[in-house]
Picture (cartoon, rainbow, N blue to C red):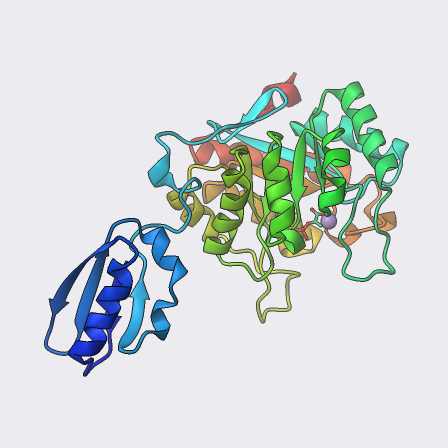
Amino acid sequence: MIIVTRKGVTQDQLDHIRERVEALGLRTHVSSGEHRTIIGCLGDEGILQNIPLLSLPGVETVHEVLKPYKLASKDFAADPTRVQLGAVEIGGADVVVIAGPCSVEGRDMLGATARRVKQAGARALRGGAFKPRTSPYSFRGMGEDGLKLLAEVRAETGLPVVTEVMDTREVDLVAAYADVLQIGARNMQNYALLMEVGRLRRPVLLKRGMAATVKDLLLAAEYVMSQGNTNVILCERGIRTFETATRNTFDLAAIPVLKRETHLPVVADPSHAGGRRDLVAPLAFAAVAAGADGLMIEVHPDPETATSDGDQSLDFAEFDSLMEQLGLFAHAAGRGLAGAEVAAG
Ligand code: PEP
Ligand code: MN
């Protein structure tokens, strides 16, 4: 931690700052310039988070030297983390596609979607049974019946299932059915929920909050990991900005930034980012070019009748065509497309 003092800081103020820091067992190193004095703090800087340094008289700014996220940071892992998702892993050489409806609506639509996306090369099935809806009057999911359908369709197709958990009270229930627990954008900073899924060893797909910085996302991952669950997949799904032409603003740069900062796999969700089906393919290709390890895409047999997110859901033909082109983008980015052999065979 580096403490930069105000112009005109007094010796008494400097001594006080140093005393406070040293009282916590750290050493200080003072460097006096013409206008500013800088105090370097040596030792476990995490401890310093316990004092409100900016409130000490004479302090102007404080800079962290080490990353506040430790377990999620690349500095703390020799190799990229690969998260096992059924027979494939996310974070390895191949780009992995997770596809399925926004919401589980029934047996037939879920089964038909799963069979079709599998045929096109998807390696996991998504589908919400507990749905976070902005309005309490919108369809909020089938609940446990939806989870049962996901498990049935997994048994039939072999596709592992990714589904959202919204409430600490439902973590064990959802984990009884899901292969991957999705934490949605609205819950990215629900720390009780993060700790609860951290208690399990089931992979977690953590979506970036609408108003969350990359650092916030990594600290949310840190919550999960601090409980012992290191199987975390990060998901860029767009953030809120002043732009209204798209549902969210897809933060493409967050993908290479995350890949630089963390060893965790990063996937992108072009469906929620763009909010319109014609944007899904270009955003998906861009995400792969930017280094995403996977994609999560909403697909519905008849988007017009979808109970949620129909505007951004691809129909089967659109998904087929996206998958055909995706292989080329993955190849250009030096990656393979997991499941391409399935689609070809
Ligand atoms: C979803 O994946 O259907 C969803 C609700 O996503 P988000 O949390 O990113 O809005
Ligand atoms: Mn959705």
